[in-house]
Image (cartoon, rainbow, N blue to C red; front, side, top):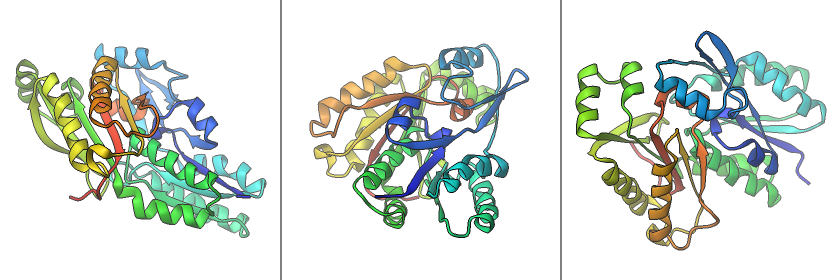
Length: 295
């Protein structure tokens, strides 16, 4: 019987029910909105509908990562129970939380020298990070050891594809990623940036696609091009969305039409508070196992 605990951060953007069902413990990032700090607790402190409504009205949330002290407080109960820990972090390409995790690991190793704490950089984000956790939980539940699960994760993390598009450029302008002129012109022309995560875990703009209907088709074409087995893909698939559920459902409908061998139902999650602080409303993200991500 396995004695290790699988843990991650709230930025894996799964539901509280799914985390609990799969015995995956999560520690919360935080965000500050309108002068008040909140835990990124899967929509409990600030319901997702309200969160994105406030951003649309002009709020500009600022995020903060998990601290060393947060990690110590989070992990210590498991160590006291005699469990080893495999913790998977949000991509080091977009967050420094892995540094806090490693510092906490060093401090706890002195107090619990008999216990093992392994840190794995997901090189992913949002529900792609979450889907990666589900695959790791599957291996744990099959009876794999902590080292075997870690080794599989290291070997396969770049096979988890993350593709995103956005139909709302407001947060990209507010965050300084595009100019006011680009945002205005892009909005008039219906420009939707199509992005993915590269092999270093950075979010990279790939191309601008004009019109929502076309970008929905384009993101599914990327799945056709990269999924393991092409349209015969028999793995799992997830999406996340930020207050644009109809767009996400349109992507799901097209995927179900083109990928008849999918394993299980496609789950649509919310883009959580921390990731959503940067994307704003109007983002749809698609996640699946595919060929190895490259630059």
